[in-house]
Amino acid sequence: MYLSFFGMNENPFTITPDTDFFFSYGKHLEALNVLLVALHLGEGFIKVTGEVGTGKTLLCRKLMNTLDDKFEVAYIPNPSLKPDALLMALAEELGIVLEGNESQHKLFKCINQRLIELNAAGKHCVLCLDEAQTITEEGLECLRLLTNLETEKQKLLLIVLFGQPELDRQLSMPSLRQLRQRITFSYQLSAIDWKGLNAYLVYRLLKANYRGDRLFMPDAVEELYRTSQGIPRLINILCHKALIAAYGRGQKTVHRKHIRMAVKDTECIQGRYLFFTPRFVYGAIGVIGAITVALGVVRYDILPKFTPALYAKTDQVIASKTSYIREENQ
Ligand SMILES: Nc1ncnc2c1ncn2[C@@H]1O[C@H](COP(=O)(O)OP(=O)(O)OP(=O)(O)O)[C@@H](O)[C@H]1O
Ligand SMILES: [Mg+2]
Image (tube, rainbow, N blue to C red; front, side, top):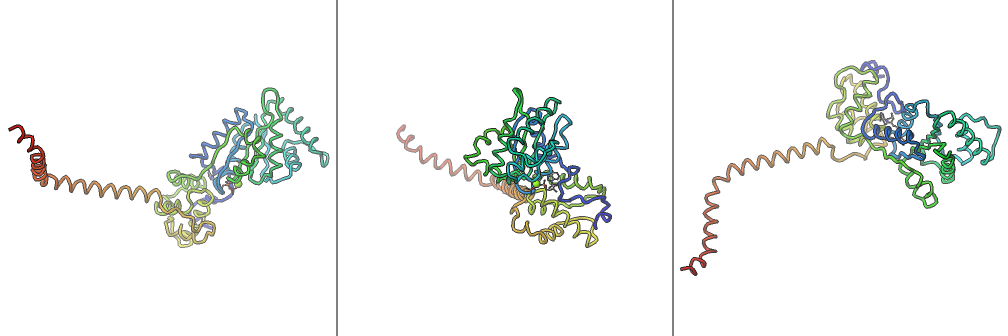
């Protein structure tokens, strides 16, 4: 593969959410900070939504890695389960040994007991659920009941939902209004912006131990932004394929044509491009500005020649309009 050709020691654009590659920038950094603050404040229910591939799973993993040992974290990556199965998954994460198929009542009792023990040991328990848009209505209701577990002073279980925008649609159902009211913090993750894209590429390349000259040329970055719209997973897919294309031709830098080859080879991207890139818009503003200034220079240049004639014409008009006053005064 291209790794030794470019002097890297691992794939810089893997699509696996690897926390070593977490780029702390813009919305992603803000989201992480919001989550950390909310959890330290003991907020019961938090929701993070974002389009497909914007980095929710990575953010979830980063959050779990960042929380210190005052927090006991339970993680359910695929929560599209019946309420009983959801409770069993949580129980297992909390280290509860179950005897068999317990009733829901028993499961709640065991979980409550364990949470009280952990709370007494000075731990805050956090349940992180990825792919939360797949949780059933009964599953969400079950989560609401879990947030009822509390001491007189604080919640025993803090819940963070990470989901695609469909989650909001689901939560807007009238039957879930009680749960909706308990969501004290919500955050919407978005794509990486134009300014951040270059830094994102450099960051991931450095993490993969790339130490050479500029690898992605400005025309490539522009094309990348236009075609990926800043969505991290699409950026990674295109960059990986573009590197293969450059390597295949023995070229040490990536240009627009390599990104275009990658796009051609990527079904989920075709036809989803931005029409204008920020670079194009800035360029257009520059050109219009230059034309305006040029016209201004020309006008200032020719205006003096016309000014005496203009004044003469104005005097004539004023004289004709005021002539009757002069006539009346005479
Ligand atoms: N802040 C970031 N820094 C570095 N890489 C990122 C960042 N955000 C996302 N990525 C990368 O983008 C890719 C997609 O991320 P992830 O799988 O977390 O998206 P997702 O929102 O969970 O997608 P889905 O909706 O399909 O579950 C991964 O390769 C991940 O490493
Ligand atoms: Mg995900």
